[in-house]
Length: 123
Image 1 (cartoon, rainbow, N blue to C red):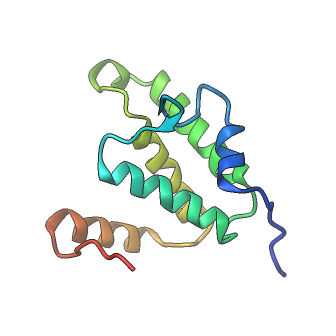
Image 2: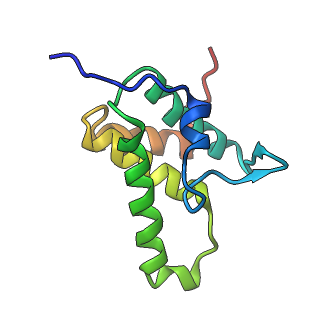
């Protein structure tokens, strides 16, 4: 059975996100502090555009849950806020829970990247 997917562009779905979960902006432009933030943002958008998950809500709801869990946790007092850490956690949950990747693949690729065994690949 084929998935029925939304047909909204990335700018449309990003601009419709509520303020508490919308990506940080400066002078109207998306703001990234580190390259990994931009990459994780791009991966979530690319997977959506390629219809790897049905609706933007599939991602957005996980992002909301990640942010709410951080706000309620005791870690909040000890860790600095980083929007894209929550974005990445939501993305990881999405790919695992929808079966796009399995935990072993995510852990292996993360380890390869962190140890330098996997270089960045640009096409």
